[in-house]
Amino acid sequence: MIFTPTPLSAAEDALRHEVRDWLDGTLPADFRPGLGLGGRHDPDFSRALATRGWVGMSIPRQYGGAGASTVQRFLVVEELLAAGAPIAAHWIAERQTAPALLRFGTEEQRRWFLPRIAAGECFFSLGMSEPDAGSDLAAVRTTATRVDGGWEVSGTKVWTTNAHLNHFFVVLCRTSASENRHGGLSQLVVDLSSPGVTVSPIPLIDGELHVNEVVLDRVHVPDDRVLGEIGQGWAQVTAELAHERSGPDRYLSVLGLLRNYLAEHGKDLDDAAATAFGRIAARLWSIRQLSLAVARSLDEGEAPATEAALVKDVGTIFEQQTVETVREIAACEIDPGGSMFQQLLAECVLNAPSWTLRGGTTEVLRGIAAKALTGGGAR
Ligand SMILES: Cc1cc2nc3c(=O)[nH]c(=O)nc-3n(C[C@H](O)[C@H](O)[C@H](O)COP(=O)(O)OP(=O)(O)OC[C@H]3O[C@@H](n4cnc5c(N)ncnc54)[C@H](O)[C@@H]3O)c2cc1C
Image (cartoon, rainbow, N blue to C red; front, side, top):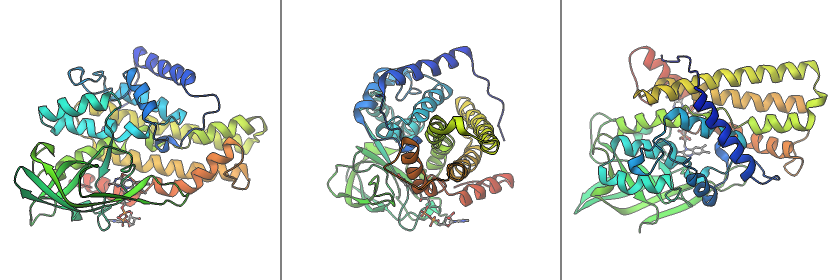
């Protein structure tokens, strides 16, 4: 385990304030914050952020990024999530597709995709889950068959967030039969506007239409859109999950809720409520230190998949318990049309169950940690 203390330098701390000031001046006074990574899909905001160099920050300069460290990106992202900024358009591309392209992509792919990602012009979704392959990701049945000049892909992906709005998704699929179920898997970059791609919404409990089913029917993917090596999809996707699981998006979904409750009712807190808020703040700060330690170790070239799994486990459970605690303290009816706090509470109550599912369920994350402790691995 590598959860080493991660102090911030003065320059890192100054960056945080720069982002905070920019957000104060950019988001309108009546801005309705999103819940962390539930922030709205707003390409204009993504592009404005990109002009500051704050999208794809850790992409090296020769590929159009800022050449910043993972920790610097962490600090920018933390401020964006804390403000509930509309980050959904560039989120996946910048959080995990860009690092995957840097690690596994060809030079040609890096030169084509990375500058567009850093400019906030090229948005990605994730094509991992399938109807019978969620936690058990190695069960994917989407298949790519070799054809002249590339691959022909058929299958069904589900829960594909924002596939109806984004440009590409990285599809985990079978490219050959293998006795080892982690073998024979590959990653292909699929253009979501390709012939044969059908995107259909899956309505969520709050009526929102963020997630989709994506059916691929003999979709042609040229050879130059293979990500990494054919047959190495499992190792690649596992490395990617270290970026997906450990960030501030796994513990900051509730910050807007807390802030708005305190803004509306902070003066009336009794001792018990003040103690509860103190405990929440202490947990939040501790989880943040764990998440920051994972960011530092990514900068040092590690692939801390187990530590990332643990951060997601404790972070998302913290988020769910915080919603319950605040709901008990507030002791009010759920009113999606009420004050800002009540709107956020309503959204939290409906969305909190998904926080411990997406990106790997709690049970599965604990399985990963247990395997690592006994010398095994994998999702
Ligand atoms: C809002 C939202 C957005 C999402 N966005 C995306 C996306 O963009 N792209 C994408 O690819 N996926 C996405 N997902 C899918 C997400 O990653 C899966 O939901 C998750 O991996 C769980 O898979 P499942 O839903 O098939 O549940 P299942 O795997 O069927 O699990 C059902 C239950 O069984 C438990 N379980 C399963 N296996 C084990 C085990 N071995 N040991 C103990 N318990 C186990 C689980 O913990 C869970 O409680 C999203 C999900 C949500 C909710």
